[in-house]
Length: 288
Image (tube, rainbow, N blue to C red; front, side):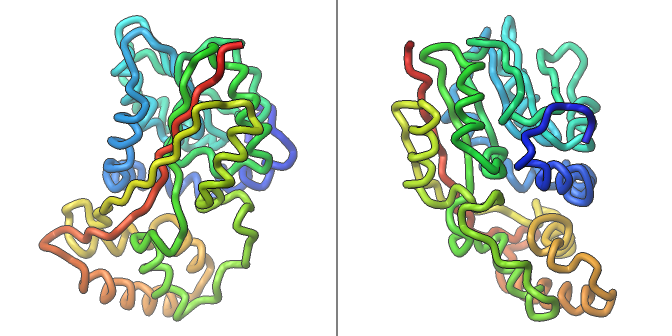
């Protein structure tokens, strides 16, 4: 990572997202944004951005949501996209159309010096579950929000409720050692799976009017491009790719064959729709 300020406890995440994970997401940016489009649509609806608003996008990655929100706040608005991944930020800058009111900053939201009371809205698509001290991170984010400003984000519910991710992982685990066990509250994709924990974190950070809504949807791993695309997507990023990192080619090929078989059973034409479970969370920065 560059010289951007970083909370010491987030160093491991910064290293991860600036190495293999960040490069993989960047390489598969188009495909992954298409897979996650149903999530983005739910987030956009919950955020209800208006022209002229200023928005902070936390963990903006390759910029998909930042670019979308920037188009929605024109004219007169602006979106600030923050992420700790340099390769993903570079892709976001590359993708943003000229003249769009979006700017991207390589930064850790836990310690970033937000302009006080700048934003009307803060949003995130899966960018808030990786903080080592999430209450501190959200409290720092509040500094950048106007009194009465809103927060809206999407996060994953329990792993077992997300077969789109767990089915490929199950097949890969037949051939490669499992990932090291972690505490359910450790930074990671499922760190916000517990609704009560989400509420505790936001309350401790000073947010009010907290609403946590379960949303069930299907994600098409094939994005309408057939079974080969679904297998490539399953192997490309996420825990399945991590479990197969560094494994011999024979192991990877055997895992891919089993993943293909499992996904073929769920294919519908050129699509492979699999269940996904998220929370859509909204809250308010109270008037001071």
